[in-house]
Length: 455
Ligand SMILES: [Fe+2]
Image (cartoon, rainbow, N blue to C red; front, side, top):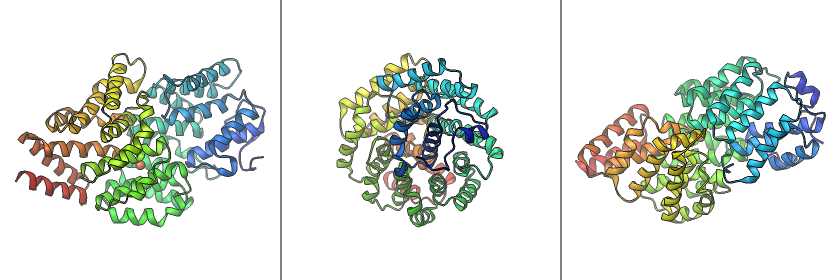
């Protein structure tokens, strides 16, 4: 039996968010899954995500929103493709059929529609539908969090911020989840760093273990190159955020970035992020940073390849593809690299409604090719491919901090190119970087290296 704090049928009705099931247990399990999702935490006392998803199916196999949240979570994890995974595609189809056979509310019907659109890779239209839900139901946390994640995958920074801003006035203190972490993240991705930190710290004053607010502060310190402050903050609160097991590996990645700035590569941090595919995704950039900085991480690439190689044909997001390619290049697994590139090129020819495949031809494929050229030592070609895209790289999704890897790759390529114009360009890019993020030890090291190489 679930704790009384989780909402039953009547409690959801009282919130103005009725659920079409007569099972109080199913309603409470829906709340329990939603709570774990927004807190990034498997609650082992409930059996974690997996235990609750099994239990909700058993409590009411025909509960449409139970299917929406279970299948939706698998989709937003982006680690399975409905093109290749028949079980996942079947789960989407089953949810749609179930919804069509029942007299559910318009809000629930929109949830089914958004989930189906997302499963086809139509992230923008899925977000439109979630936003439609939020206009009438601003406290629908599932719509808010799904859209937040989908905006993240599109690099849609401003919508990610405004989507939360719009509903904030409707959020009351009695509600079980504080939105400050979500809002703070949108603020920092649109470069309102001071406001983002203030909002995140307000969130932490209310809920010290809110790992998403911790994560926002980590980003602010990263983007402002406040390395010592970031180190102190992450260390001082580790016990609070570590319990959010789904996000902890990513927060360790942020912690590791400060060490990279300070040239203290501590591989134990990297090993924290090696538990599964989504965790490994977070540690790939650390390995590449080490690599371009001249640190040997050969064994690490082989470890990561074991996790990423089975996903070579997935092509769920460009962000994932680029990270999988980093691994196959780092591991010198050229057949896998080629296969990934050719698969993406093929999908780009007929992308249909899939937004990521629509972007593949103009952004994803040239970025993959640039990485392959860099890997071959063809720095000139890497610059020619990457430089025209530098203001479009945001479209691959992720955060500014994550995408900085590709800015660094462009700078390294420009510095190593034989082309004098590229060498000058590399210095210009470093000056730009220093202007946006002053006092970064990494930028200053690169400036010194550029001077040593070309003066
Ligand atoms: Fe992050």
